Image (spheres, rainbow over the protein chains, first blue to last red):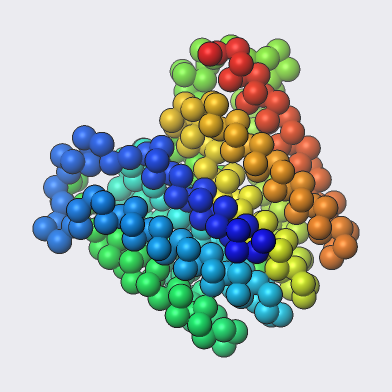
Amino acid sequence: MLFLTFLIACGAAAATGYFFQPGTWYDELQKPDVTPPRWVFPVAWSVLYVLIAWAASRLAVIPGSGTVMALWSAQIALNTLWTPVFFGAHRTDIALGIIILLWLIVALMTFLSVWLDAWAAMMFLPYLAWLTIAAGLNHAIWQDNR
Amino acid sequence: MLFLTFLIACGAAAATGYFFQPGTWYDELQKPDVTPPRWVFPVAWSVLYVLIAWAASRLAVIPGSGTVMALWSAQIALNTLWTPVFFGAHRTDIALGIIILLWLIVALMTFLSVWLDAWAAMMFLPYLAWLTIAAGLNHAIWQDNR
């Protein structure tokens, strides 16, 4: 039940990828050579969403996890916001601001989780790593297409 | 800190209203006579976001609030998703599905909160009432503009 509820939250974030797809605008952008092919993104996100929903369901039952739960809420809302701003509104500059804030919140959430449940913290690490890559790509795309 | 973190989550949901504004598409839709004027929406949402962030910060520190926190996460992600789907992708049909799921989750969250903190549950009630109105408007707009 807990896991499924957190997965619904992730589903909302994931759904933005369906409604705001890359399309020709994205294809025509200058992108760094290291940009992964398109199919990598939904695969990576699916794995990450399951991991962070699972970690959240472990943390939610631990007394004293209120701050981590608040950070989890903030990160899933910011995650849901990023795709429409980037792929919908084409505001790569504001999207960069969003993903930097998202990165900071996930980093803090991961750090605070270590003391509550080290396994959950480890499940957040691939997410933090991927956000680092995504923020780098977002920054490069913003810089190279102004 | 807790309140501010939940407010950041609400801020992400609120920001969608900036990036996906009603515009001419919305102006030209057939809308029910009872549709509130445009300025009512940001005012209502601002009050509601403060209330639900406050309620969440009260609930997060209560042991056993894991399920309510999971539901809070799901509702803020679905809330963030609704605006881009409705005003960005113009998918009033899918937006209706999203807002119905959102309503159910908020109703369950409110119900479960009563036993944890009756004040927090009462702070969710205006949100549930507004979602009922919003879902009704969404349904009418979908029906009248097919």
